Amino acid sequence: MNHKPGDISIGLVSISDRAYNGTYPDQGIPALKEWLAGAITSPYWLETRLIPDDREQIEKTLHELVDENRCSLILTTGGTGPSRRDQTPDATLAVGTRELPGIAERMRQISLHFVPTAVLSRQVAVICERPDHAALILNLPGRPAAIRQTLEGVRDANGNITEPGIFTAIPYCIELIGGPAIETNETVCKAWRPETKTS
Image (cartoon, helix red, strand yellow):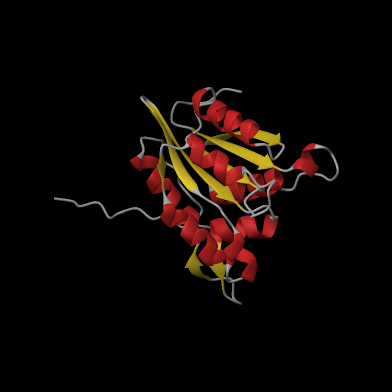
């Protein structure tokens, strides 16, 4: 498959012991693929990984997606709770060079509209920087509905977005760290960018 230089590379990492072992089908990557297909209108390509909830394996996978696959955006799903097996945030912080706490705070704010246990989430967002490349890494929930809600936002009974999801800010963030432009389907998610001044 040929990729153009301006196409964004997105890494999708589903972290689940039971899905990895085949106890049940993985739902994280299919949910992410479906949402991205409806939300992003510019060219992109995906690198997908299904791995166990093991800190060393998670760190290795994230480094690989940044260094070898040149991903500018990496979305993980699963492994963000308080149990001892939930290692995703710890591994993500170890790989990142700078943390973006506002994104993590926003993810929990959105989830609280749907479940009170959102306060137990340890989701984080970081930038992983290299001399000539950087990637934004986000920890998303494990349930498909929660993935969509977090990315897209809160909608009212008529389907109108009342509180934007985190993806509204993602394209601008990617540009700020030197990545390619991402255009979105505004009916799903309207990307925010500062107004350009004209002379």
